[in-house]
Length: 359
Image 1 (cartoon, rainbow, N blue to C red):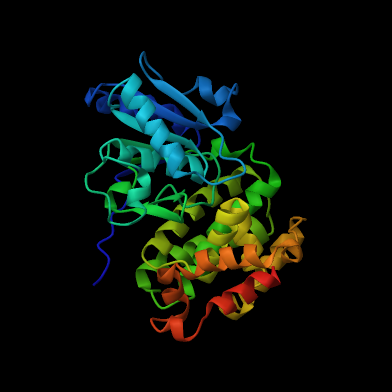
Image 2 (spheres, helix red, strand yellow; image 1 turned 180 degrees about the horizontal axis):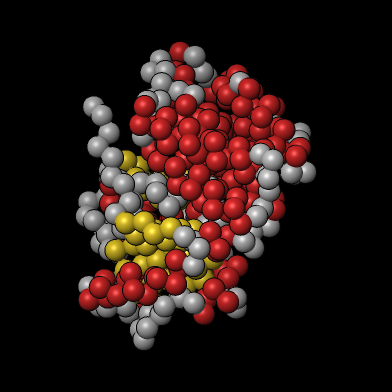
């Protein structure tokens, strides 16, 4: 069966478009109890951006620190329960930050209307009811969370997303001015998440013309940003990388991610690595899946003088490697894309352990 893809309802792009947020959400304020929840990366606490958030009486700004770990089911459940108990049902929720913050906003929007813990809904189409209005404002480019139908959460047992049509944002605000203060290493690791999305989408059995159209354009933009004559952090490239992130996310949505993301999930769940960084650690050693793209990736690492750690596995116990391998192995949709529907005949748990030992 072909995917019946749900895209973002509305998108605004351009420098300074964050200033339109108040007008955009004004009609939504008539819903439910009329207030908004703004989930903001704690990096921005006390900074000028917070003063620009179009709050009104009764609104809530919740600063969330997601360093060093990924967002968790507990964070989502606790935020939902606190808001409902103290304030009522919001008209909408906004996520202002990186992929983790946007995923928290998407997941919490769903959980306002679905009972129990978000742990119950980690998987495909397990959500029973549509959530409240939700809006995404990326302040770093690369995650693809702004267009993804998945809100990735780490729970007590697994790292897996709440994935359904209702997860997708109702509105996205793409303002490249918001990304100017990103530190270089973080800019690179998160930007490489987009590059890896593009390469993984084209490197498996679910690749198709729809995915190619978005992925080719995203790859071209990534190469201009990270390997072109004017490569680096500058206003022109900030614009390009923000669109590359959007298109890369759309490319993988109609295709799939593969071996790199499977390994990175293990690194994030067991070691607490940030997603973009974990992808870079894994991708650097996966030539058998991604061929010349790994060499291209390494050249970009060198050009931008990124200190990508090596020989990390020397400090990992066999138990740690086993735990990570079990997480990676139990992501069959990724391995099907990478190796085919008979992937279990081609890959064993020991084979995944061997991949981790290279890192």
